[in-house]
Image 1 (tube, one colour):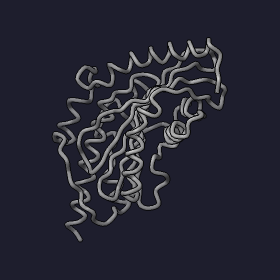
Image 2: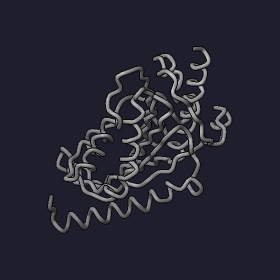
Image 3: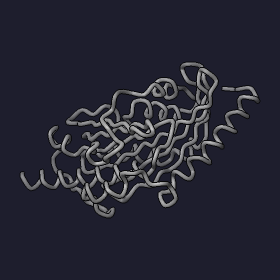
Image 4: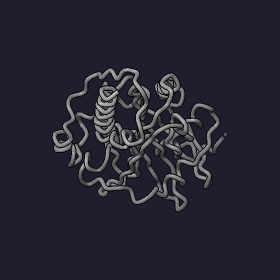
Length: 261
């Protein structure tokens, strides 16, 4: 798709501004810590990241999947149960681009299902940040491990194949998109996360900057999928700690389940 030079200049400037803003947010050491961060780790019992072999074992039951969720009780204030999908989901994430890999990424960001619809037990929690209006969606579901690992390898390649591209929304807007790797603690059997930034204009002509983290961790036969997104501050630390806590919790529940067999 070819766009006028003026549009290209706008996209380049807005995307560069977004990159500068989010670069600081991606660095855990430099990022301002959200209020809940220090208390959350001790309250939840989360320990330093360690590789946790999960074994094969049987798939979780639905009750076990629910018990493995990360909820507002883990994150604390300002996180609360979600009040519903934000309008930017349809306005910015329903978009098309020419590259097959980049289009697949956009579709996954919208559906929040990198591994497709689960066919077995599953559980989902959805939370809103009352301070920044960010939204976090966390899912535990059974998926074939080989399929999960292939998708994780594909996600790992995206900063190279889809590092920067443009996408047209269904409402006629143009978004400049940048894709970066987002490091995760070494938990679970396999893991990958991305930070995706979309810069463009609203229908009213106002500049918009959407940041969306998508993370996935495989623990045995189950996969954790986590998205954390918003038009304001989106803390990489929230994504990383939720993935760490969730993977540790899921591994423990799997361990307890095997002990009961």
